[in-house]
Image (tube, rainbow, N blue to C red; front, side, top):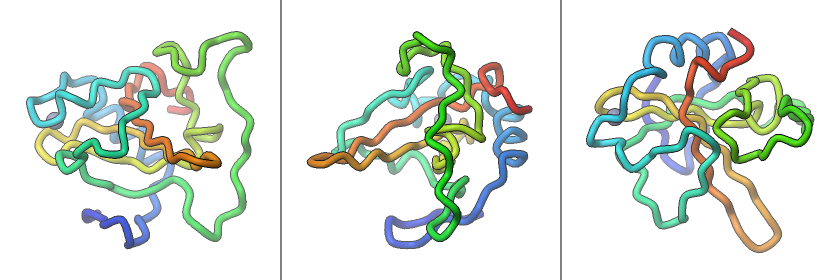
Length: 135
Ligand SMILES: [Zn+2]
């Protein structure tokens, strides 16, 4: 799996591959290179944030795939930004995320890009295996 530029399509990663990555590297602490990506819950980054410390490993959803469900696995009433929100790869927003990892220590992150009417929201979340529901 190589680095992808903004214009290249990422490779497909399967939920099983994502879960394996989470188990292998998801529990480790941040290294200095990825220290400013502290995102135990979904965290919005400014568009100007330098993400060069991370590389894209692939995506769970690729253009041309069926539209993934917008249903969420979040328990009713739970804040969507909470660190407690489960990470269910079959459900929104995880089902259309890219998987990124630190170039130095391989700590893995999910990246979700939301296209609003007048903005693009870049969100990252650490791929913590303890939050994954579909291991
Ligand atoms: Zn790192």
